[in-house]
Length: 406
Image (cartoon, rainbow, N blue to C red; front, side):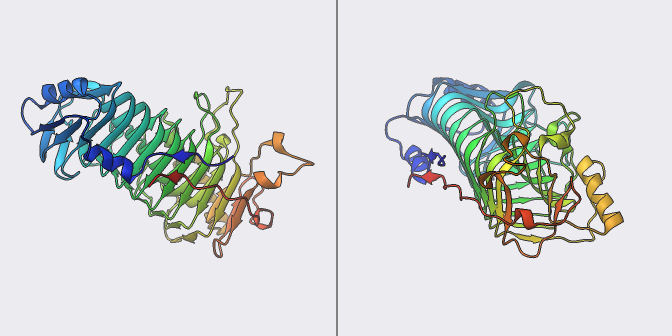
């Protein structure tokens, strides 16, 4: 299967800025911002550009835009045009965009929203360009779950964005198809960047640091879109993700130990290469089945085991003075290995496989977990307590890149 074609590009973003087919509506921060902006979002027509001058726009309720096409919301910079929801008393998000096509969000910030900062649902063609989402102050489980949150979308473009303080994931793309996440900074979140139950995603040239977990590629049961894959994670800096995990109780991402670089869980066809993954206190990288959550699976269509994972040409480094997070199960296992075996693995594989794929007791070549050219790393199969990487010294067919129209 080939990677899907992503239709969004810098050209896509630029055409909104220069759009001539619609109106340009300008706003300044004022006491009437709530009414003025929400009214404009309701009345926006095809091709309209809503331009927000520098200033702090204070909103008491969430904003929403539904059923729109070819609309751009543009500020003067994510440190200049600030939408503050610190006094929000109504609404589940800061901004909700739903059931649209070709929407551009550019150069503004959303701060202190009661729930998710920007949620985009069922939109074909959504571009986040230079957007910042942030919860200020100390980490708090009461912060919104997601910063940038496109879900059930296709053709998703996230470029040059910043996400801080989310109690789940700073940048989260779920149940979506045709995705680019590039040049972003994710820090001080529980999870920095997460791709979940999605297809054809390229995640590259990002910095994930000071999160509990840096970059997550997950597949979860019970969702409409299942068993995602064809995800490439490359040229990222995933370093020092040692922030405490402050997810609310019961949240699945709460199982991620503080000090985690990259986790691939229950996903297939994932390629991880040319990344810098270092000094994540508990583990630089884990490849795991859904079994690590110790939760039952009741979804008969869900595949709980990773397959066709190719990890190559990465640079791993570990500061052995850093302590593992023993408040989480995986962290406890790592701490035990360090204390009893003096073992500091760079890549941990839980060793659980999809037995339905086995041929004569072995995984087919194109479904294996393969690691190559990652330097002198220590690999650990947790199930077998084996550091023998021989079985995983293999090569997979590379996933085709997302093709971005220039």
